[in-house]
Amino acid sequence: MLLPLHGALLVIVHALVLIKVFALADAAFRPARAFPATGKQTKPFWIAVLAVAVLTTLLGFLSIVGLVAALVYIVDVRPAVREVPRGGPSTHMGPYGPW
Image 1 (cartoon, rainbow, N blue to C red):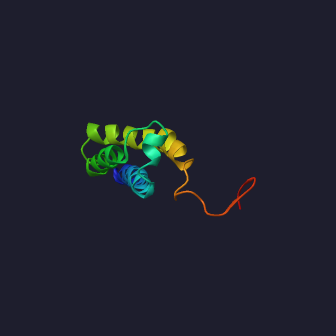
Image 2 (cartoon, rainbow, N blue to C red; image 1 turned 90 degrees about the vertical axis):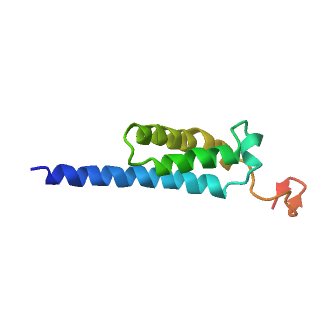
Image 3 (cartoon, rainbow, N blue to C red; image 1 turned 60 degrees about the horizontal axis):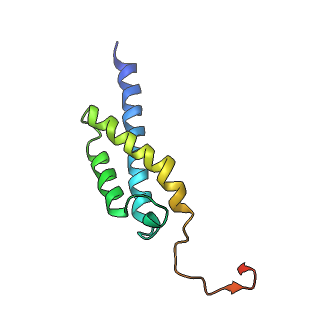
């Protein structure tokens, strides 16, 4: 009957939650200065959007909107923000760069 379909939907919902939680956790651990440095929205903006995305996972259409927001973060914002170094200036600088 609907038992196999129920299992598939359960897997899909769990995948949606994992994607959204991953995006939220990644945004939380990135340095705040990296967001404006790459021309993206601020860190608090992305934290708020992704937190609402996680909270609306079971609310139908809002869940899809939240998934789109998480995917935009993962595909567009995350690669740009990853390029910015985490700490301040490196103290291990040689004549040709960090060592």
